[in-house]
Length: 83
Image (tube, rainbow, N blue to C red; front, side, top):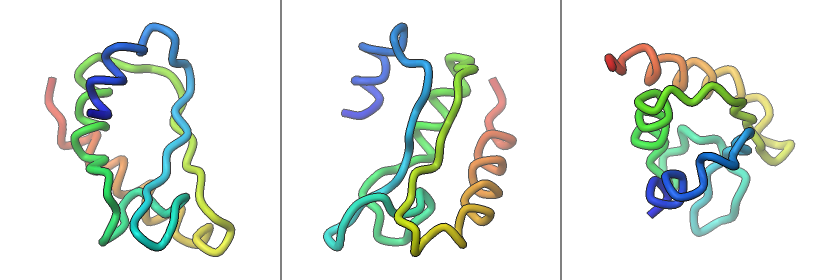
């Protein structure tokens, strides 16, 4: 459903504020074990359409120490995509 929404509204999207969520709450790191959102698919789609806007990681303060881990994960996903 998220990718369908992105397809529908991409011409108006300049910035993605991204975070994950689970039953405990929201604004969790994107590479989160119990997270509900599959960011691999989303990032692969953004790479496929050559999205060149900004991605902003938006987490609760207690997770700020995990930014670096998620940045590495995002770079790895984008590096592995070959379009």
